[in-house]
Image 1 (tube, one colour):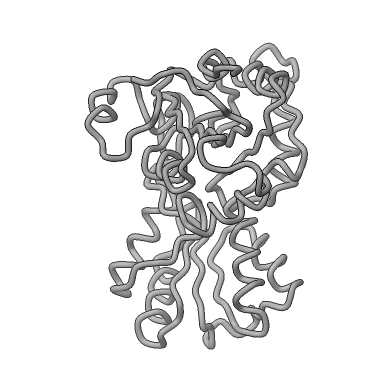
Image 2: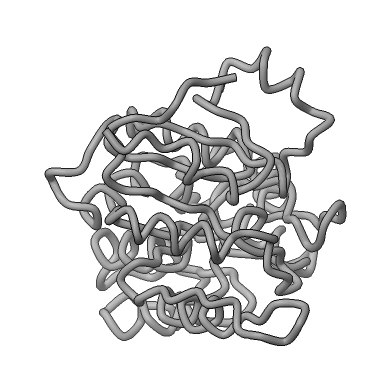
Length: 281
């Protein structure tokens, strides 16, 4: 599937399942591919649906990854080259809920700390006008029930960082993604969430601002391992897209991708193949 990718000026990379697995294993060929993209003078961005860490924390973690032989992987991402679901959530809350109470359900408290520092109120969750689900590990049932109650009975806005059903932990091994918990609250509250991470309108807006007004449409290549988030975001941006088979998408699913309404421009074995598909003209 696909023809050479022409006219690309910026490449947007998913992280988990594309550059690395959630257990910290670097996907073979990923560091060399990123270096090759930089050698081609392309802007590079990472966009992750994991809400647990801020952009600078993710950049630091990626830059500290090692290969199986113990040598540094060699990623050299600047903080401003990384966007995360947490980054997107903080900005959304600050632009829409300063001076208002918000219930933020997350494991590490990073979104709450940053949002509170900018004037979002989090000290009276029972008065929340919005509920944000930013979970990447199993929460308590009572936590989800309370979130659904605020949404259904008190009209709180239902926000979610992402709806990914699976999370590539290691090759061929998956864990539940945030979407599993969002689905529970959606069923209990009978409301659909406003999604802030990929493939939402909000994520496309913030990403476009990061790339600049001169980089848009087919001059962008979105690379990721998930049709419903990465490739759908690419379609929303009117960008070119490449699906890699190292994460949620697996080689045995190729017939599914061929028949899907969310079709990538190319399907590749891994990110290592991306540079060779780029036409320099």
